[in-house]
Image (cartoon, rainbow, N blue to C red):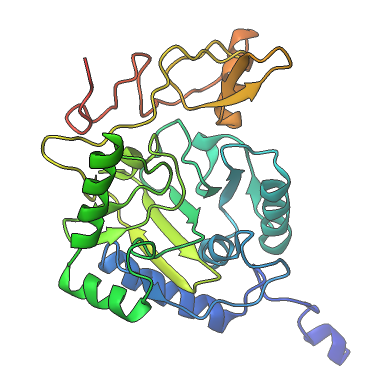
Length: 313
């Protein structure tokens, strides 16, 4: 018997790319984030073979959590086929040897930039959101030291003042994506640049949500079945983007989050933002037997937690 036969096969990289020390550190930080919902936990963001700002924070969390039996789905603003989503999905599959999918129901880990899938996630699934700016107080308090002190004191008066100024000037909340929320009645949190349509999906969700900013070296979590409330006044309520009157040109779906596609004649065409969900609807219309999960909003645009959103009737 030769010595070479007793040695381990050569590996040019660790399983899932990150070395074991990096994964151990990330997992410990994740556990702390889960224990303190909404709290920003610092971590040592590692170098990856892609530029910061292109999903390195979410990618590190995915690589630390993924295992050989997982099935991974990666989306970018709802699309499975965008360049960024395809590259990240290919990298994860190559480094971890896992199966990939475009079906939300089949995935155990879903990494996303700027969207949450239309189909409800279930217990046991992990949603990883890429975050560019984890600090929700940045635009009202540029000092990091002061912002951390405000979090410690739960002093969010400047955010309330900003909302009041918006109402005085424009008679509505002008914030779009990344609308600030309060997690478990304690910490103000930036839910990543998801549209307001997706913000309620974090409330009392059955799945675990991990949010990570690689460039800012911060991660935080929303554990399953945790209250996530958008900040609002008692007499002026939080509202999602209206999808009334919009019909998907590919599937005929209504009251789903749509992408607006300008046409040469100046009109607009609407298609579903969630391409995986749209593909299943198309296959069903073609006569295939497809499992389509329950959605967060019904066909009348009502959120499944009926008391969460205040609808204007």
